[in-house]
Length: 119
Image 1: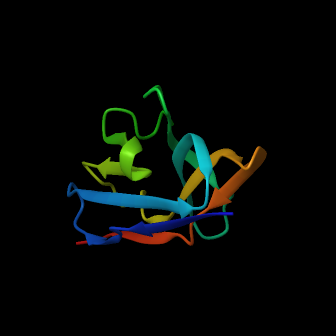
Image 2: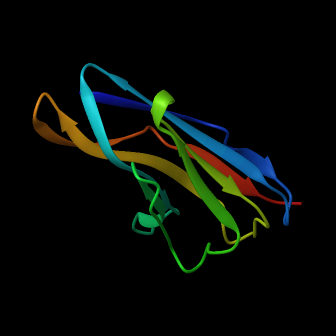
């Protein structure tokens, strides 16, 4: 089993920035890709950004040029730098990791971290 622990959410003014972090832990696991998703009340969870072990990234159109995903493989940690936050961005952000543990595939989620954009 792979556990994900997120941090860095909070309250920010419109146009401000936040940096989310997510650390993976467990026993003998391989991470193929990590990413961030978000879910607003009453809506489906949606992709924000993903990054592979090799550093290839993918972003939702709504966050391109504003958000940056990065990864420290040695620490099994993924980050999401969020700039120019908009009132439409507030929601719960979830970390995700996919890979293999003891040869078996896994798809793990963090507990979520709240982001609120308000003046």
